[in-house]
Length: 487
Image 1 (spheres, one colour):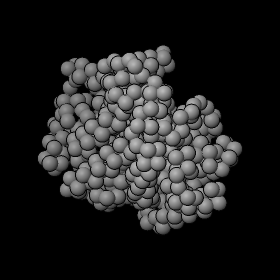
Image 2 (spheres, rainbow, N blue to C red):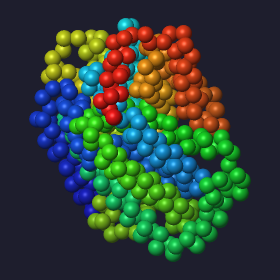
Image 3 (cartoon, rainbow, N blue to C red):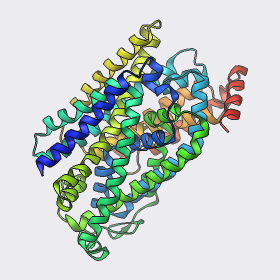
Image 4 (cartoon, one colour):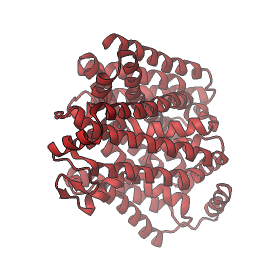
């Protein structure tokens, strides 16, 4: 299969880079490079948000978890569906209006402007958190790329990681936000096509439900949402897996899509498109993991995360298989490009412009942004060189980090007039520290670290609001205007 797959991957890479070159000339200022001039419509926004959300873990990490542990891992998907809807419905419209009213291009920029933080700490610390967790998140995608190329071409893992990273860096470096979003549209479409076709063909190939059920029984894996093997899962396990949905409220690369849409009036249509995409995609990923038990009963030691790859190579001719395998690349690249751009945005807007050169011109800022893409990419690449890393674990830590650090702060920024900059800063720091300590103490096996981090963040904000509530009439007036305009 190597030659046809190489040809299809080559065509795919070429299309991505051509889009990057096309939008290279379309960026006239930093607003264009980082947010596309807030000009994108419903289809591009919806596909870009969801494709950049799901990443390689959708087609590799999640099916691998279902393959190993069974249907109880579907609580992750259920939590994500709920979180996606609430995020689009409640957060997106107000964030779009608020960021334009405060002339904010990044999440740290918005937090500083929204709360009128006189110290600059809210902006600086949030930018640091973004850089740390996005470096981890980006490395997870590069790991997925390495595993994909290693499986398909028997390529050395480190070389595979390097080759995959070069293309992603290329079109993000050149085209910025517009290139990222338009490539995401193509990648999102490719992902949803593959995740419909592959499990349907695999289901009929293995012979339906009976062989799948027999394979699950042989592995002592349950199809019951409430069981792991022969034992019932605890309520803590269900809460822990569903808590992935909490992460949505704090993901900078997803929130950036809300900031870049053309108009608040586009949201109803955008939400319908996004929800259809996410339900189909998550259902397909669950099906791949379960069907894979019957088709490949003996995968272990990290090989279970490659079940989608093995399924395609077994079921389809090389040329069709090459297109479908490109969907895995699409899933990986659609997330990493967004993360590289948001991280670059934070370095450019929140460090370089804010702390180093406040008089920097538009062209200078765009080139600083491009250089920052390269710097972050190199660090992520070095982290990804360890082939022992699992995709889902890396994603879980970064996803939880953003949810615990920013989720409650964003919700309170958009829905609480009373919240002050002191409350937001204390909550953000507390949520991050609780998450890291919980993880490092090994308590993640009891409950996903996002839960204690998220709760601690919220509690601290509410408590400090009692002592230091926001009393600024200017902030209150702006808040009321946003509420009115976002309806």
